[in-house]
Length: 452
Image 1 (cartoon, one colour):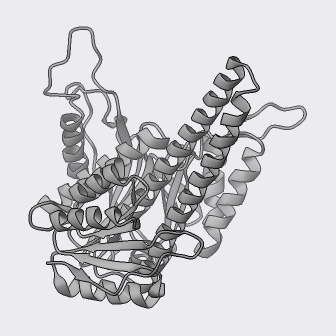
Image 2: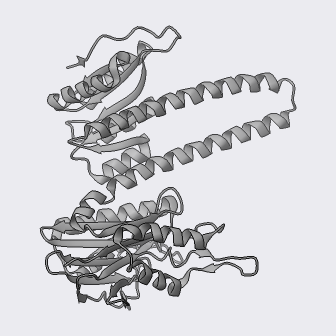
Image 3: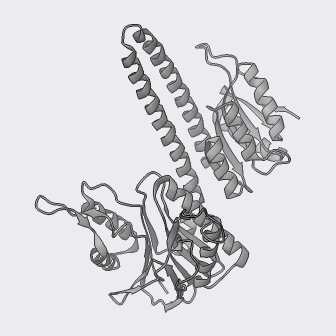
């Protein structure tokens, strides 16, 4: 059954077509609330239609576009009878590639979100119940993005007409070069747009920093991707007074690293959903087995002479009792740093990665390390991108890595400062060292002070 929110506005005097926003959800109450929210924030400049299934939504879109409506935005739930939300948004993107798509649901699984990002150019995912301000800003951002895209289309059309006029006056070779230039620019724009969409999703699945601050008030996160998206991520899981905190360094950076980070996040979440609390070294063993299996690095046949995928990750994982300060640690190629009584202590992880080689034999086990934190102790988990950053060049000295020694000295210096000043101090120190050198790798450090 179709539900029209209000009468269609007349065509704009300047010639702009009437505009439609389509909301899709199988719950009528949700649709009504969403419609009222949009009417309140957007005013009368749009037709806001509601559909209770993907099939009905596609019929409405066909009907309105036949009547020369533009469709700037489609907002869809994920879990619906028949066509799921990601399937609908992919079909919408196929038919109306300039329409912005937004997933608004409380039950979307990560694969559905990734599927929509990859195949429907998903603008953003918002969880139910939505925050009114966040929804308003997101919808307005999507509409602004659509209008900018339309303006760019009009500019491109004007340029196309100009090029057609110039083609009559220039050689065939010049025309070919102009065409190649335009094609490359468009491809670059498309690529950057796609990566920026991926960054929105990556940020959405990262832990809620507000919740982390609530659990660990004396904590901070230093995060600096080398490219737009990152292969480094932090993860936490808590239940009652038990907190698991991980810092993960996936192979690669940029888009390949981001794909690996999604895999790491989803597999860790699945482990904690299935097993709940596990000793940290057993968590790493289970994660290693799942990565090896998922990436077909083990238990799979490969053509003779071929090399299985070598992608994997390094990880530092701690389990902290938030009442007693008892801390358990296990690592895969990453250590734990603790500043205790003014001295830096390093607890090394196992000298092996998670996944990566495709071999299960001839590997050391992940070890369990147990510590008791004292009030004032500082704990740091990080990826190797900080110590590996090149810089320090002067007129007479070439660049070099920041290195393990400078990094350890920096941690000791940070531990003397209030936790609120440590992220800014670390940022300044790294940028001063880097100077004009390009960033070498993704960089991530999570630190906290135990208050007892």
